[in-house]
Structures are given as C-alpha cells and as structure tokens.
Length: 252
Image (cartoon, rainbow, N blue to C red; front, side):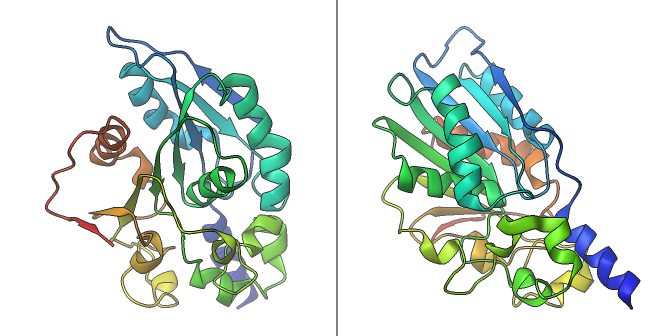
C-alpha cells in the first residue's frame, strides 16, 4: 500500500525539477511582431523542455519568447515569482519595452495570473492557460497529507489545493483577455476516481475553465496536452487575436 501511494505521488508530480535556466528566442519570420514577447511557464515538477514546441511556434510566427525554467518544487509561489520569474521577465522581456503575453501549462497558468496581479505590465497582452487548476486541484486536497507529498511537490504543490488558503483562492477575477484550454481525456482512472466530474487525469474540467474566460475543450490528457498541434494552434491564434472557431469552444 505504501508503495502504491508513493507511485501515485510520483505520477502527480511528473518528473524531477531541473536546474533553473531561461531559453530566450528572438523573433523569426517575415512578419515579426515587433515589440511583443511571449512568456512561457511550465507546470509543477516539469521543465522548460515541455514548452519547447509552443515556443518554436511563437518564434516562427514572429514573436520574441522567453521560456523560463523555474524550480517549481523548491519554493512557494511568492518566492518563485520574486526570485525567478519576475527577474527573468525583467531581464529578457522588460515590461517597459514589450507588450507581454503569457502561456502557462498547469501551475504555470496560475502563476501567470499571479504575476499579472502583482506586476501588471503597462502593455499587457493576452494570457493562455493550458490545463491549469484555476479553482484548485482536488488531488492535492486528498493527497497532501501523505508524507512523500512535500518531498515530491514542495511548498508550491501545497498551494494548488482548493481551500481558502490555496493560491487559486487568492487570485482576483480576470479583467483581461484569457483563453482556458481544457483537457477532457484521462488515462489515469486511479486519479480520476478522486476528481469530481470530467477531468484530464489531474485537473477537473470545471477547474480548468476559468470564469470570465473563453474555454476550448480538447480530448487530451494533462501531461502532454501542451505539445498537441491543435492546442498550439489555438494558443497562437488567441495571442494573434484571430477568431477561434472551434465546435468545442465556450465562454464561461
């Protein structure tokens, strides 16, 4: 039983967090979006490698892009923002110089909202969150009491719950353009049994669709949804301010 619980927690976390690094990619293409920068934030216990396909798409479309590899399992959200994310943005995509867009997977989407709430750029563009727990994660509520949880997911992992002290509960309603990309398919029945309603294996559909945003639903699981070509196209189209005409779209 103890081994099974440990395996569950490892699956929840994804993989070990690598060293901090920033991948900066200047704009390419004939029609560069001069003065615009896309900030990419990976999820809990993931790395910037998980966002490379997204970054490549934005760079090819003419955007400057910074893909931040922050130590998601080592610090709480406030420290991650103050010590890693905000300095990286200031150095590579200074808000005074660029119109900033954000694309975040899972916890990265929630941290994008936190950044905007605390350091709102004078030229704020658009946000795309992919499988992000905007109302918290029921998995955290049910697994956080287990001893290995802190070792695997760190302080920020505890903040991903649904309680009053969770990060999701401390975020303000959005007053800027935001697209919620929602996964609807799970290959993890064990986790799905702990999550009410439909889910992507880690985050419920209800939590991933933020109130006040446009929501697009895709038949993918949580772990690799950000690498799917149609998801990347939707994220790029939203930042480009294109019309998103999907049969599975809705506004919450």
